[in-house]
Length: 309
Image (cartoon, rainbow, N blue to C red):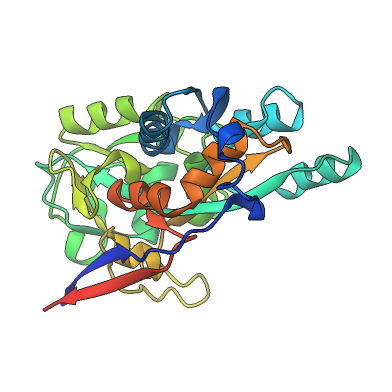
């Protein structure tokens, strides 16, 4: 049985793209900024913006919530200068950037975990990639037809809920778990994470997936109004089922939890203004502490793992 482990951020200031933020503070903390943020991680970035504005009263940050694909398209097309998204550029996006000689600043902001969630009345505690693939492609439609310890543990038709197309976790889950296969054509598509949570909470037969940011109360304390299952990956070569791991900051940090994604801040703005100030804040100690307290894992600050027996 795994021991409980906690993460703590160590103090070490990291400045966005090596800008002298302290000297230029007067120009990087004043004015107005409109930024686009991936809906899946928007709760965290809202906290970042609120704290930045509290500390810098002459600043105003407006966040536009979009899917990652939409935000990246807006950045490339010049419709937005600063975005925070749930994945890196794809090859085709990098090609467009290179062909158009766009200069994009990019920095990794955090690690996120994708939780597989069910209703609290569901007796399941764990699930593996094989079972998930069959459920989310529609091959398995009844809970009783799962594998091993899960077989006959629950009964009834499964109701599948999927994050909307163009959301980073929609594409990630499809590639990582479904191996590129299409989602079940009778799935319910959730346009927001709020809808996903509401559907899972209100339906005993429901299953879905969601960013750690939406199921965290504080740091490593999860929302108990839904159940996040332990997940095991499956070796595609020999079918070996790995260790079942719960979604937890420490297991996202060491990537033993099998559904881990990366969060990036991207900008095309090189002027020493509020865009640089806000980006620097998120990547420095205070911003990374907000990342930690929101359930994600900091990446620009060193962290300490505390093990409790």
